Image (cartoon, rainbow, N blue to C red):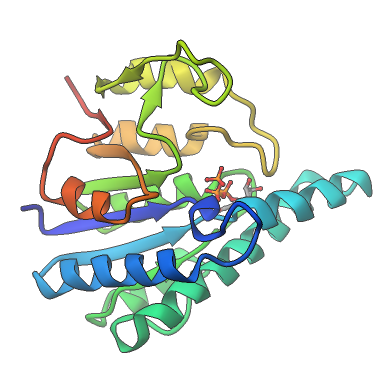
Length: 231
Ligand code: UTP
C-alpha cells in the first residue's frame, strides 16, 4: 500500500441533493480517513466548494464583480466545508485549514490529518490538491467526485459517454481543454491542476466518492475509476 496520499473530496459530495449537509457521508469520510491514518498513511485532504460556492459565485457574477473576487468567495466556502470534515475527524485532524503553502508546511510538522480548501484565485480545489501532492511528494492523488471516473463526454448529458480506465497526461489534457475555466465552473480538472500532476508525474485516480469506501479501495491500489499516469 502507498505511504502518503492526498484526497480531494468534491464539495457536492458533502451535501444532499436537497442541499442539506450530508452528515452521514461526512462521518463515513472521517471513518475511512481515520482508518487509513491508523494504518500509517500520511494524509492531506482538500475539500471543494460544491453547490454553495457555485450559488454564491452566481450571485457575484450578477453583481459583475471581478473574477478574482468570485474566486475568493469559492475559496472561503471550500474552507467552511473543510471545517465540517475537521469537526467530524475530531482530534485526528489539524484544527484549521491551511490557507497557503507556508501554513501547510507548519501543519505537516504535526502527525494530524490536514484538511484544507482553496488557496488562491484562478484555479480550482483540484489544483490545490495537485500542489499539495507535489509539495508533500505524495504517492497518489485520489480525486473523489460524483462520477465513476473520466468519460469520453459528460455522462450526465450524454448517455453514450464511455468511462476511460487509464489515460496519460497528454490525453487527459485534451479532455480538460474542452471545459470552461470561469470561477465556479471547473467541470473536471483545471489547467493548473493538470500542469502540476503532469510536470511531477503524480499518479492521479479519479473515483466515485459517493461511496466513501472507494477511497480505501483506491489507496490500496485496486483498479477503480480512472487512473492518470505516465505511460
Ligand atoms: P471547486 O470548483 O474546486 O469546488 O471550488 P468543487 O466542490 O471541487 O467543485 P465540484 O462541485 O466538485 O465541481 C469552488 C470555487 O472556488 C474557487 C473557484 O472559483 C472554484 O470554482 N477556488 C477554489 C479558487 O479560486 N481557488 C482555489 O484554490 C480553490
